[in-house]
Length: 194
Image (cartoon, rainbow, N blue to C red; front, side, top):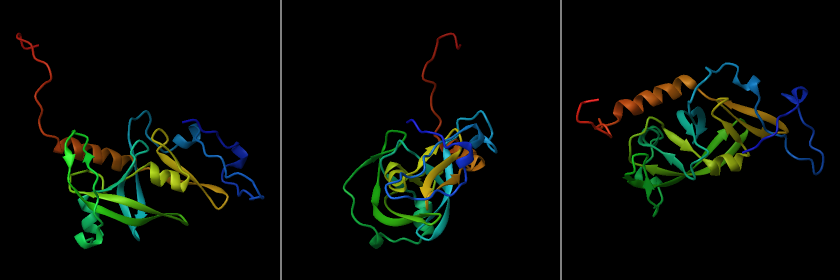
Protein backbone atom coordinates (compact mmCIF):
# COMPACT_ATOMS: atom_id res chain seq x y z
CA UNK A 1 0.00 0.00 0.00
CA UNK A 2 1.31 3.39 -0.91
CA UNK A 3 0.56 6.40 1.28
CA UNK A 4 1.59 10.00 0.97
CA UNK A 5 3.23 11.89 3.79
CA UNK A 6 1.85 15.07 5.25
CA UNK A 7 4.14 18.10 4.92
CA UNK A 8 6.02 18.68 8.19
CA UNK A 9 4.20 21.97 8.78
CA UNK A 10 0.82 20.21 8.44
CA UNK A 11 1.53 17.67 11.19
CA UNK A 12 -0.82 18.25 14.13
CA UNK A 13 -2.49 21.17 12.31
CA UNK A 14 -6.21 21.61 12.09
CA UNK A 15 -7.50 21.23 8.55
CA UNK A 16 -10.34 23.42 7.38
CA UNK A 17 -12.96 21.43 5.53
CA UNK A 18 -13.98 23.32 2.42
CA UNK A 19 -16.79 21.99 0.29
CA UNK A 20 -15.38 19.08 -1.71
CA UNK A 21 -12.05 19.13 0.15
CA UNK A 22 -10.51 15.71 0.67
CA UNK A 23 -9.72 14.22 4.07
CA UNK A 24 -6.22 14.73 5.45
CA UNK A 25 -3.60 12.51 3.82
CA UNK A 26 -2.33 9.71 6.04
CA UNK A 27 1.28 8.64 6.03
CA UNK A 28 4.32 7.75 8.08
CA UNK A 29 7.88 9.05 8.29
CA UNK A 30 11.01 8.17 10.26
CA UNK A 31 9.78 10.61 12.94
CA UNK A 32 6.93 8.17 13.61
CA UNK A 33 9.49 5.57 14.77
CA UNK A 34 10.56 7.75 17.73
CA UNK A 35 9.79 5.86 20.94
CA UNK A 36 9.93 2.42 19.31
CA UNK A 37 12.64 -0.21 19.58
CA UNK A 38 14.17 -0.60 16.13
CA UNK A 39 14.79 -2.81 14.25
CA UNK A 40 11.88 -5.12 15.06
CA UNK A 41 9.36 -7.55 13.57
CA UNK A 42 6.59 -6.86 16.09
CA UNK A 43 2.91 -6.97 15.33
CA UNK A 44 0.75 -3.95 16.14
CA UNK A 45 -0.96 -4.48 19.51
CA UNK A 46 -3.10 -1.65 20.87
CA UNK A 47 -5.67 -0.80 23.53
CA UNK A 48 -9.12 0.05 22.13
CA UNK A 49 -12.46 0.97 23.68
CA UNK A 50 -14.74 -1.94 22.75
CA UNK A 51 -18.31 -2.17 23.99
CA UNK A 52 -17.66 0.67 26.44
CA UNK A 53 -14.54 -0.90 28.02
CA UNK A 54 -10.83 -0.24 27.48
CA UNK A 55 -9.54 -3.51 26.07
CA UNK A 56 -5.82 -4.34 26.04
CA UNK A 57 -4.03 -6.83 23.79
CA UNK A 58 -5.96 -6.06 20.59
CA UNK A 59 -4.10 -7.14 17.45
CA UNK A 60 -4.46 -4.83 14.43
CA UNK A 61 -4.26 -7.16 11.43
CA UNK A 62 -4.76 -5.53 8.05
CA UNK A 63 -4.40 -8.94 6.38
CA UNK A 64 -7.45 -10.37 8.16
CA UNK A 65 -10.96 -10.04 6.72
CA UNK A 66 -12.91 -10.60 9.95
CA UNK A 67 -12.82 -9.18 13.45
CA UNK A 68 -12.34 -11.92 16.03
CA UNK A 69 -13.10 -12.00 19.74
CA UNK A 70 -11.40 -14.56 22.00
CA UNK A 71 -12.68 -16.08 25.29
CA UNK A 72 -10.90 -13.57 27.59
CA UNK A 73 -12.79 -10.64 26.08
CA UNK A 74 -16.06 -12.59 25.77
CA UNK A 75 -15.93 -13.36 29.50
CA UNK A 76 -14.62 -9.89 30.42
CA UNK A 77 -17.59 -8.24 28.71
CA UNK A 78 -19.88 -10.68 30.56
CA UNK A 79 -21.44 -11.83 27.29
CA UNK A 80 -23.73 -14.84 27.25
CA UNK A 81 -24.68 -17.24 24.46
CA UNK A 82 -28.04 -15.45 24.10
CA UNK A 83 -26.15 -12.23 23.20
CA UNK A 84 -24.73 -13.91 20.10
CA UNK A 85 -26.29 -14.46 16.70
CA UNK A 86 -25.67 -17.65 14.74
CA UNK A 87 -22.71 -17.70 12.39
CA UNK A 88 -22.50 -20.32 9.64
CA UNK A 89 -18.90 -19.62 8.62
CA UNK A 90 -15.87 -21.61 9.63
CA UNK A 91 -12.51 -20.24 10.66
CA UNK A 92 -9.09 -21.84 10.35
CA UNK A 93 -6.47 -21.10 13.03
CA UNK A 94 -2.81 -20.31 12.45
CA UNK A 95 -2.09 -24.00 13.10
CA UNK A 96 -4.46 -24.99 10.28
CA UNK A 97 -7.15 -26.32 12.65
CA UNK A 98 -10.83 -25.52 12.27
CA UNK A 99 -11.92 -23.27 15.14
CA UNK A 100 -15.28 -23.60 16.89
CA UNK A 101 -17.38 -20.47 16.41
CA UNK A 102 -19.65 -19.52 19.30
CA UNK A 103 -21.45 -16.94 17.19
CA UNK A 104 -21.29 -13.32 16.17
CA UNK A 105 -21.90 -10.07 18.01
CA UNK A 106 -22.02 -6.43 16.92
CA UNK A 107 -20.16 -4.04 19.25
CA UNK A 108 -18.94 -0.46 18.99
CA UNK A 109 -15.25 0.35 18.85
CA UNK A 110 -14.56 3.91 19.94
CA UNK A 111 -11.39 5.60 18.75
CA UNK A 112 -11.25 9.18 20.00
CA UNK A 113 -14.62 10.65 19.07
CA UNK A 114 -15.15 8.13 16.25
CA UNK A 115 -17.39 5.11 16.83
CA UNK A 116 -17.55 2.21 14.38
CA UNK A 117 -19.94 -0.72 14.86
CA UNK A 118 -18.10 -3.99 14.25
CA UNK A 119 -19.28 -7.57 13.77
CA UNK A 120 -16.99 -9.77 15.87
CA UNK A 121 -16.85 -13.51 15.32
CA UNK A 122 -16.58 -15.07 18.77
CA UNK A 123 -14.34 -18.14 18.82
CA UNK A 124 -13.57 -20.75 21.43
CA UNK A 125 -9.81 -20.95 21.00
CA UNK A 126 -6.70 -19.83 22.86
CA UNK A 127 -5.03 -16.62 21.77
CA UNK A 128 -2.60 -14.31 23.55
CA UNK A 129 -4.76 -11.50 22.11
CA UNK A 130 -8.19 -10.54 23.40
CA UNK A 131 -9.38 -9.60 19.91
CA UNK A 132 -8.27 -9.03 16.34
CA UNK A 133 -9.45 -5.96 14.45
CA UNK A 134 -9.17 -6.26 10.70
CA UNK A 135 -9.71 -4.58 7.35
CA UNK A 136 -13.47 -4.00 7.76
CA UNK A 137 -12.84 -1.85 10.87
CA UNK A 138 -9.75 -0.15 9.43
CA UNK A 139 -11.61 0.73 6.22
CA UNK A 140 -14.74 1.97 8.05
CA UNK A 141 -12.54 4.23 10.21
CA UNK A 142 -10.46 5.30 7.20
CA UNK A 143 -7.34 4.15 9.06
CA UNK A 144 -3.88 3.13 7.91
CA UNK A 145 -1.71 0.98 10.18
CA UNK A 146 2.05 0.45 10.24
CA UNK A 147 3.73 -2.32 12.20
CA UNK A 148 7.12 -0.73 11.43
CA UNK A 149 6.07 2.56 13.04
CA UNK A 150 3.95 0.83 15.72
CA UNK A 151 0.94 3.04 15.17
CA UNK A 152 -2.26 3.52 13.29
CA UNK A 153 -3.44 6.84 11.84
CA UNK A 154 -6.95 7.90 10.91
CA UNK A 155 -8.72 11.11 9.88
CA UNK A 156 -11.04 12.70 12.42
CA UNK A 157 -12.52 16.18 12.62
CA UNK A 158 -10.19 17.42 9.86
CA UNK A 159 -7.07 16.16 11.64
CA UNK A 160 -4.86 13.09 11.58
CA UNK A 161 -5.22 11.19 14.85
CA UNK A 162 -3.08 8.28 16.07
CA UNK A 163 -3.37 5.09 18.07
CA UNK A 164 0.05 4.07 19.40
CA UNK A 165 1.05 0.42 19.62
CA UNK A 166 2.43 -1.26 22.73
CA UNK A 167 5.63 -3.10 21.79
CA UNK A 168 6.09 -4.52 25.28
CA UNK A 169 2.60 -6.04 25.10
CA UNK A 170 3.34 -7.39 21.61
CA UNK A 171 6.45 -9.11 23.02
CA UNK A 172 4.44 -10.56 25.93
CA UNK A 173 1.82 -11.90 23.53
CA UNK A 174 4.54 -13.54 21.43
CA UNK A 175 6.05 -15.17 24.55
CA UNK A 176 2.58 -16.44 25.62
CA UNK A 177 1.97 -17.85 22.13
CA UNK A 178 5.35 -19.61 22.05
CA UNK A 179 4.96 -21.02 25.57
CA UNK A 180 1.59 -22.55 24.61
CA UNK A 181 2.89 -24.05 21.38
CA UNK A 182 3.02 -27.85 21.52
CA UNK A 183 6.47 -29.34 21.19
CA UNK A 184 7.16 -30.26 17.59
CA UNK A 185 9.48 -32.86 16.17
CA UNK A 186 12.27 -31.49 13.99
CA UNK A 187 11.19 -31.26 10.36
CA UNK A 188 14.36 -32.98 9.15
CA UNK A 189 16.63 -35.60 10.58
CA UNK A 190 19.93 -37.12 9.58
CA UNK A 191 21.45 -40.43 10.41
CA UNK A 192 24.63 -38.98 11.85
CA UNK A 193 22.71 -36.67 14.23
CA UNK A 194 23.68 -33.39 12.60
